[in-house]
Image (cartoon, rainbow, N blue to C red; front, side):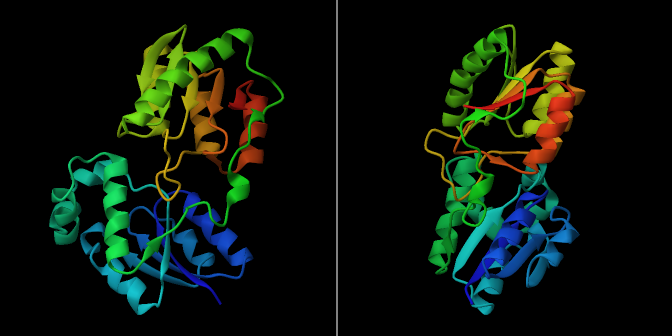
Amino acid sequence: MEKIGLIAGNRRFPIIVSQGAKRKGVWVVCVAVRGETSTEIKRYVDKTHWLSLSEFGRLFEIFKDEGVKKIIMAGQISPWRLFSQEVKKSKEIQELLVSIKDRKANTIFSALAKKLEAQGLELINSTTFIEDFLVQKGILTKREPSPSEWEEIYFALDLAKVVAGLDIGLTVAVKNKAVVAVEALEGTDNLIRRAARLANEGVVVVKVGRPNQDMRFDIPVVGLNTVKNLIKARATSLAIEAGKTLFIDMQASIKLAEKRGIAIAAV
């Protein structure tokens, strides 16, 4: 039986990866992060090792002992933990951070991929077992964005591509051709909340991949939480990039968006 290692962050992304791997008969060894990974993960993997971030160095030892050669990373680690005491206490993480030119997400993950490779471990595409979750081009909700919303979408799309190319963030919120909020370290959900505070209602949110998106890590993900935050923000529409964005719990998310009049398009 094929065996893979899973580095699991928060939310449902690691769970759907595990489910997809099991459907294909793959043995999954999971390294779960305390304070991030859902305890539900153990229902879908064959073996789970729980680590705090301060124990980061054990990651490589665990996968070697388990005979794992291929690794998938799925799920976010809360960005604020980059500045936490447990990160400061990890010699291995500090060595990694000192060795890189900046602390952008892509820089950190690229360095981690190289460190895995140096240990004889291959980081593979995080959509390997869940390619069906990658959204294809089209209108996903019954309601299509209005002509004015399309103008906002394409206005924001160009901006989001530039921001993503600079590895600042992947999401932009706009209203009346004004840039309301640009995602940085806080993540998409917090960006939507911030946009709502600034613009009150009626924002359009666009999320894209990087121009040269590395599908091994930090790929765009939307899901039910995204839609719930759009509803709270009284947003009008969401556009995501086709072929690069994972849509988790898509049917439930679309049903909820339709109920509240939010248009969703993959462009």
